[in-house]
Image 1: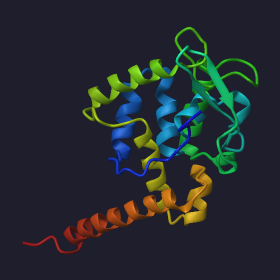
Image 2: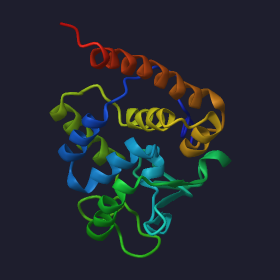
Image 3: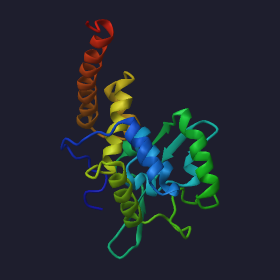
Length: 208
């Protein structure tokens, strides 16, 4: 699929953690975990659409990215392996997401090991246009009408970089085949570090 999985170099806005929480609360409840996984784990849209029960290991708090799912203009699902070897990975879940994901699997996911994690209202695999419609409604409600779903992934990269993760670690976690995109998150973290230092000034020297 031409262009699938390609990282764009354009600078995009990065949502805050608070905004992500608001978006997760505002969107259809069956898509709440999709927003959280995009923002805090960094999965791509195709990876989220292709996620199956067998790929989620709640006991060990991991998600394995083994396939991606796209939908063509006729509505046919196109399922295949990630575009690059780097895209095939097993990533650790933040423990705070495990309970949310467990509830989601119990209530919304298809049954069986090959069942899709994210589904539509009728229980079939989630369609991209359904996701986009719900996303557009949620972002407008939260007051970030220009925020793209992919921007959540940028937050995941920036948060990971802020923990001190190196370039190779970021490449692995986000499934990057090159260093360029990973370095972008480290640059964003440097800008955030300046903002943190400025905020510390007010604590160190509150003034008169």
